[in-house]
Image 1 (cartoon, rainbow, N blue to C red):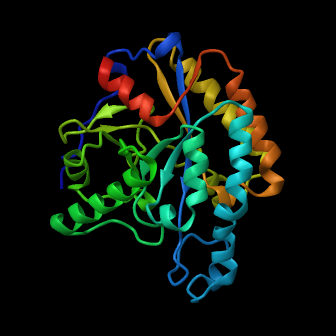
Image 2: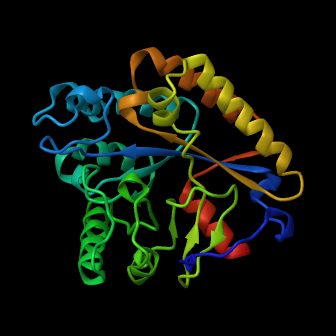
Image 3: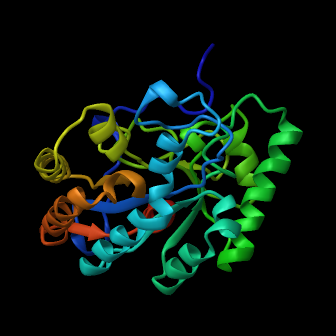
Length: 285
């Protein structure tokens, strides 16, 4: 079938994007703040036990995130003056309210990231999906005092009607389509796709490829250098996708610090959030 959600737009035929202050690269950190159900399989580090219920090995690995890893990540962001773009499961609101309190104190951007990360969003009838999205968005709005502007589905999952249903709820962008280095308009009125990273992503790099901390630093540096060069005539977006149960492990902490320090001190970089990227693009494009 044809893709009716968005059309083809080669980078060489677009109007230039200009970021605030003449920056070439808009950089944001997407922090996945997630709840995993104890009675369902999910992202695993050891597949041998992944189908067991309960699965202490893999569930415990994931649960390290809200208990330990997230707080190490928060300290690193604070040191480098960066606000998180918090990709928030609505189940987090009830189960880990201290995380929401920490984010509110730091003026994080809040994106809706489904109810939990054990339940993927796909193939729901429109009325059921509308109710599901409304519940997720409403729960986050009540907890944070602001309505989310952005959405990322658990596992980057959507249905064909997701963007239109989100627009009905007042949201303006999604992160699920990881096919560009610039924002672009979806065919759903008022909706954007904002770049997110599936390769510059700690799960892909550390779990999928078993790369080391120094590898991670080099990859972040290489990504920024290339995007900065590409952006000589038109701005680019660099998203760094992090999961506290992965990047928050103690032996990776210094490498995250090194990577963030390089970005924070690089000329021509706008340290921002996905919310502000979407708002600037909608205002100026």
